[in-house]
Image (cartoon, rainbow, N blue to C red; front, side):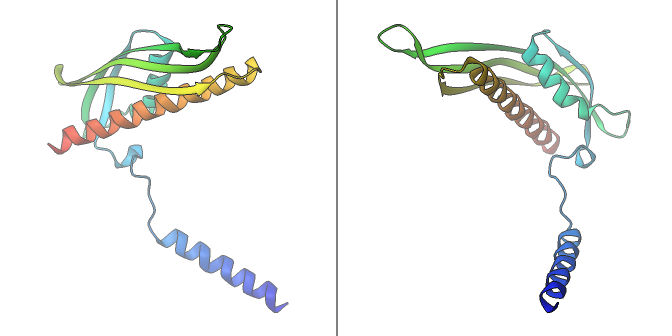
Length: 157
């Protein structure tokens, strides 16, 4: 019985400290002072996936600085090495291109993108396809984070 009350007290104290520490996500949309009015892509799946991630930053708040983006990304899967039979051993997914950042219809900055990840081939092609999808999503998330950091830096200059 005493042990149960200690667990309950510990639980409530933990909840109290976690709630009162003031944790907030650094890159949450409510902490940003910018919004995207328009995002133009080259209609490739990679660019459209990035646009989907950045859609959280669309806003009608006129008090925020307004930016427009032109996203031109390409994705390639490259065979890095083969065995003696000519079968692929190591692949690389490469996402490259550029993102143009416009403020008041003037080019503010251009972000050149070159993200890649090397990985081993597997016998199970379904698992390989799933793994490639996860890699691609992680690379696109990295690009989105880099873009948000770049825009925050532009505002602080």
